[in-house]
Length: 172
Image (cartoon, rainbow, N blue to C red; front, side, top):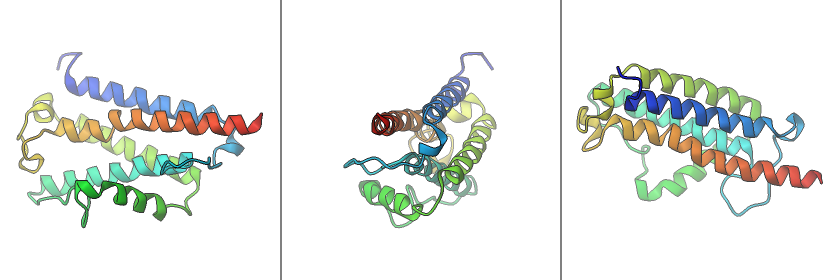
């Protein structure tokens, strides 16, 4: 495998963005990391963002598991279509309101590791070739993996930057 393969680039980008995300969270004093900010946005604190990522990892793992066993996965989730994604994301957030930030961090780190291992287990050809797996329909594994790792982490970085800034502003 060449050093600049799509798979290697995806793994590298995912790890870098994952680290950036935690650098932002860790820039906020430990005792303040659970603070919620006032916003019209769906996610009000670090936990909401981290749990969102965790649940999307879990959905990806389910799609993958079902698809690789010749089942047709319910994407994005049973009972939801892509046009209902906002409602799904609200349901995810609401169902984790009793979870601590520490638990959210642990869950996300474990799911991140599992997804990275899934990516590592495939060749560039398997990841990049459209229709290589029947369950990806006209797409490829890359689209699923990138959307739920490096690209999703970029979204989370932006959200957490706003949350961190607001939390630190309250201190002054």
